[in-house]
Image 1 (cartoon, rainbow, N blue to C red):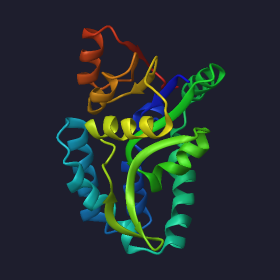
Image 2: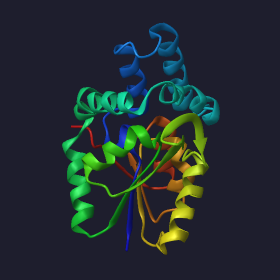
Image 3: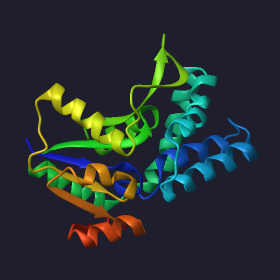
Image 4: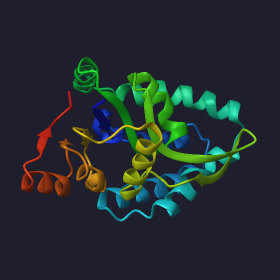
Length: 218
């Protein structure tokens, strides 16, 4: 089966779910407003600049999951989906997903954002397969740590290769859609790399390599 791979934040969504989750925690007074907001914004800028230390960021971003009970986290996540994620949905993204469904492609979201935040987004978009950064769970509670390799930059390639080996799928004829130069390692692995509303660095590489450039913004 042909794979159609999609980055999530600022690609299928008109915004960044990871950063928005941090904003939601601040707005709901679940975390300290001043310090957490400043750190959340700083890490996001480092990501945009291609300077993010992923493990340092995750030690920050996963702490709220470790500090609260699962029932509260799930309730807050439902509110987050309605308040933050639904406004980020894009009709052109839905149409693109429908195109690949009609082609009977195997569709996957592959994202650096953690599974707790992204799993309901994948379900909302009707995408069965998800590779995301895995927050460590012990006895049904988050520890604040990371399980395995974060799916960030080269980590996306490694995590996808593990999935390919376990399923028998291949990258033959595969598509990958992304907005970010952080995804260049995986974009260079597929037959059909597509830059979606790309940042300036990705746009330059895409033009240099004659990759397709599209916009999904409504």
